[in-house]
Image: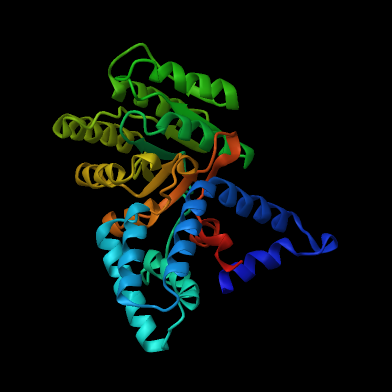
Length: 334
């Protein structure tokens, strides 16, 4: 498997040839391996059972594979398209042995995510003035923790980072973000008010005056009343745009990966009410159904930009489809 060979070669690099870039790449791949361990164990066990049950590729094989993939939260529509592609490859390449299909499965996973697009997983920073990143998502999705970890990452990259506590609705949200600010050594702007727009206004004025590079803005997470949330996000976006024209440069939706198909419903709902530019999948290490990454991309066609692969400060990683698939299927070629 070409993808696996690439990463095996990385880990087999002789010590004298290991650069800082290779070290960082090794760390990133290891994070994906560890973070996707639960999902990988389930995939490996189920596919091993499948291949023991069916030595030859058959219609029954595909039916069982379809069920495995749906149970992995890849999503029914995505799975049906995926199975059709596999059947086509089997016919074209005359694949008979079920073990020979494993490489095709990995290959098609990659293809179905890319979907002939140029996948942009990096933050769209602006050249002039602070880059404003707005975070949205339901309560409990891990929004505040994600902001804190991203602040830590950006600060370590040499950026001057500000946090703005714009979630004035949830009890304890302001205090939680302020605590994250103290923990990672970043300024956190907060006020004793329920008016999120006024907090954001004050923070952005200060960010411009003090030449901050990046501003991370938290928002309320209620989704029960879409009309109210839409009005609030419209107001917030207008305030941001009036102070910094063209901002926010990113609106990131944080989804708890452990919520499965409910997370996809959230993505669809938020896409209806505001312009989502990227998705952060938090708690991916906490689920055995890691296929949600593929389902979300297929369902809402919004790129996953970050994934949460653990509880440590550096466990928020830029999403990489190759490392994700390697972490998900690493043991299958053994």
